[in-house]
Length: 204
Image (tube, rainbow, N blue to C red; front, side):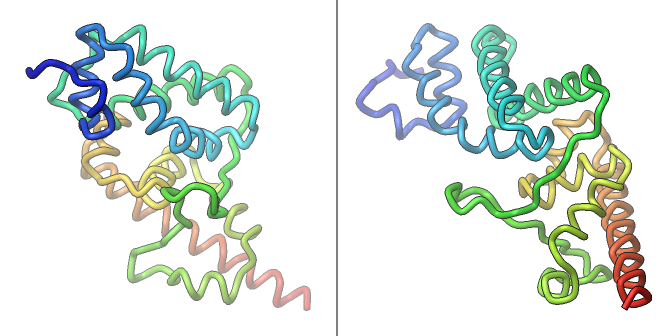
């Protein structure tokens, strides 16, 4: 590998930076933190819905990355490896507090990588229809009622826009199971939303 050049640090890809960091270049790690701290905050906030918990998890994730740098192998994308660490920490916190995490589906305008939930399956209500027929609180409530296994993969796919392959690696679940859970989770979201709409109609 070529010698590290600090002036070109922003031009290196994530995997190159991780390799330089493994070879003692702390500046490479600092660049990774700069690139991912906002995205990681957004990702973890969707699980905790608590800013303090989120900040603690972001710091702990980067601390784990720093301490475990030599366990990273370049055969994996750095982002996938990092998200796996973050997800495991979030799950541990969830179990420790024994409470349901809450998902925020509102787009964060300050984060260019943040995206609104898109239900892409043709058999499910389209995004525009959801916005027209239902308030955001109903959609958020539906997500919160999903089993954890379904909610987890929908967050990674529809909110974080990760590929099926990345989700499979992060969750250690076969790709076929990932796709099945996403489809079943989306179907349950649709059913729950239809129930809320029916209740609203009856109340009126």
